[in-house]
Length: 145
Image (cartoon, rainbow, N blue to C red; front, side, top):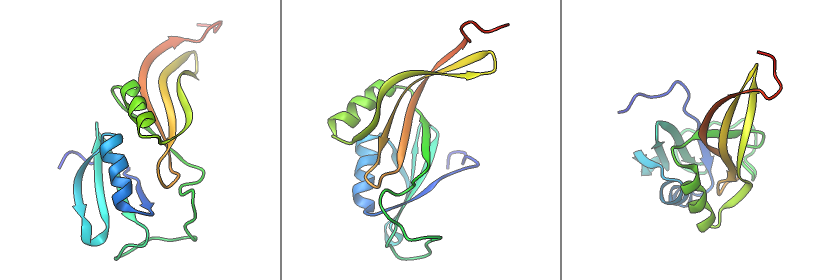
């Protein structure tokens, strides 16, 4: 198994098969581990690890409140990809919900800015996914050295 990151989100989904078709066929993840009898899959894409589990499936489930659409309210997952433009075209072709269209954004960090070419989409269960490609760094305009 590839090195496992220190944080691997596990997302409850309404229909695992439908979610897998989006994550694998459109978003480019590959299934690393599948446990169909538990309605569970462990996905990887370019070093990003993510687990999907069918909410009504068998086995142990963690619940602190009823699950209602959109799932994951209040969180978006930032996912770095090597080619955000091609991924964006794939998402549009699949008619998935784009929340923020493809854009270039610069985020200030002290006296420099980190650049991203990014978009935000909602997966079939409403989880927000922010895919980006790194644009590097630049000095803050008008900033003091």
